[in-house]
Length: 347
Image 1 (tube, rainbow, N blue to C red):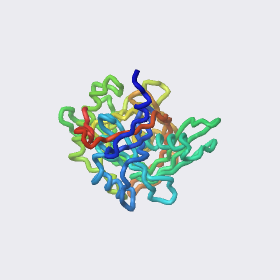
Image 2: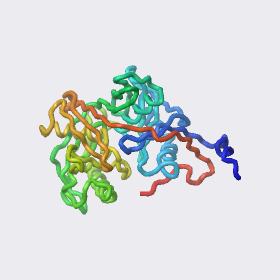
Image 3: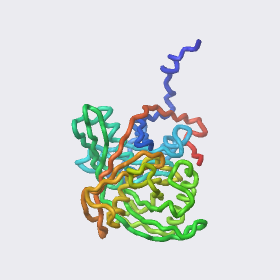
Image 4: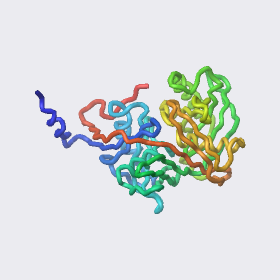
């Protein structure tokens, strides 16, 4: 009989890199929070630290996100000191393609993890956090009842519509109608009824294929316009909008982002941008909440707390709510002699 205890006691050689993480999911969408092993990032601001990570340690991002330690749809967070004196921490978001500007599901997951593990003291009925993310300052909160977290939400940065009822000619698809809006990142919103598929799991491959086709076409001709921060000026994803599968919900989102990733959640920054679109169309008013489904049927609710401006654009301040759950604590090892040490992606 082999001694399993020897496996439990085994430690990686000193020349291996060890990355420790806590894993969480928000409505099915993963977040891998790096808690040790990532090099200290240099820079005075969050964006400078993100640039340092990209220019010097991108192989670690790939190793942590991609196979064989992760997968094509993994998402991650690097915790750094905040930019502002009001924030508890700063965070850099990573995924299969690189680095994103804002991420609602990650904000919800971080809030859950930091409160559940006792890093932030749990206070009933509301426990509040604040964080700096590349797109700005975010306030999040957990609703607590009888010592348990019942829901988690956040108040987003100003969100606005750049284009509404626009059209682009996509090779192989023809003219595609879309709205373009910022919700912490830029998304093009496309009604799925323009095609012969739906926002459901059975059309997973078609959603990725058509979403990336639309995204690559738009990248060639559509210019994003953030009036105060040019670092935000790139198209993060395509969000297909479909009818809800639960009649009490408003609609369904399927976000195709980065290098063909599919968001399992309804996309926190995506529902924020949709709130701006619906307000611009006169579909919803301040304080009115709508519930939006994901490709797997999980939901976020979103409402508009107030109206503001972002440069020349009329903007809204959305509040998004969802749920998250811790799934594991991991030690990831990188053997310098492993030919696949930096990860790979199969799509």
